[in-house]
Each structure stands twice: as structure tokens, then as C-alpha cells.
Image (cartoon, rainbow, N blue to C red; front, side, top):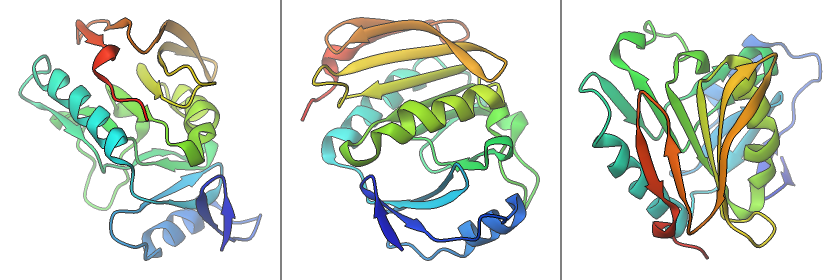
Length: 198
């Protein structure tokens, strides 16, 4: 293993296919609280997030529970597979409908998510800003909310949507302190002034 961008990466053969990477991901024995993902074909192990990171996730989750249907869930540890980008992400929050439950043994396709939320950490923010943005767009995730407390010293919330051709359109971007609105089916205004900043 080697250190890369604040996370550990597991060496693998460049010619490894998707099935081999998923097998390696399933077999990875990470310490409790650590997040194991596949990002652009590399199995990555990230340390447990900070208090502020978890607090932000908690705030968003409470707001979302007030507006989603009963048969929808909010997950913090559900994988979202994007095989076309050699990615298997664990979003900080993901909204998915019960009817989209994967079959036993099947990975959850990111394309079935209603919304994904990533909250950057200092050590691996570029994963969320670049690799995951492209991955979620390629998968056709309808809404991607990126909460970036480490954005050039100016914490920023950016809502991406309307994925087409593997890219998102920026629907709204505000510095922390401003308000951001999730469109239907959420119809939720989020006050980013509530988010802690380290």
C-alpha cells in the first residue's frame, strides 16, 4: 500500500478488470470506520471522517427525511457502482427508492440513485471534485450535491444535475452562508450557514 491524497491505495495490476477489482474491494479488510472505495480503478481506503464532516451529513439527512417519500431511504454506507469509470463509491449520503433495491449479491448501480451527496475531506477532496463528479455524471445520477469545505478557503456547495454525455450541468453554486435549493422531487431549500467549517 502507498499513501495518496490522504488515503491508502491498494496496488493492483493495470490489466485487472472490473470483476477483479470488485473481488479485491470485497476482500479488503479495512479498520472499522474506514471507507473502502474503487476510484478510477484503484481500491482506496479513507480514514473515518471528522466531526464537522459527520455533522454536515447529519444536518442534510435531517432535512431530506422531511421531504422524501416513505418508500425512499437515505444511506450513508451503500455502495454506488459505476463500472464504466471503474468506480465503486460509498457516497456520504445517497437517496434511493425501495423499488430500486438490488438483487441479492448485486452491487447497487449509481444510476438508480435519486441524489448523491459528497462532503469533501481535506486529504481526498479531489476524488469528490473530479473523479466522482465524472463518475456520477456518466452513470446518469440526476442530482449530485458536492459540499466542499476545502474549496480554495471559501467553502462552497455545488448542485450538479442534468447529466448528458458524461458531464453535469452546474444547477447552483453558493458559498457557505447562502441558500441552495434542490429541485423536484425534493423541493428543499438548504441553508448552508448551518454547516460547520473547520
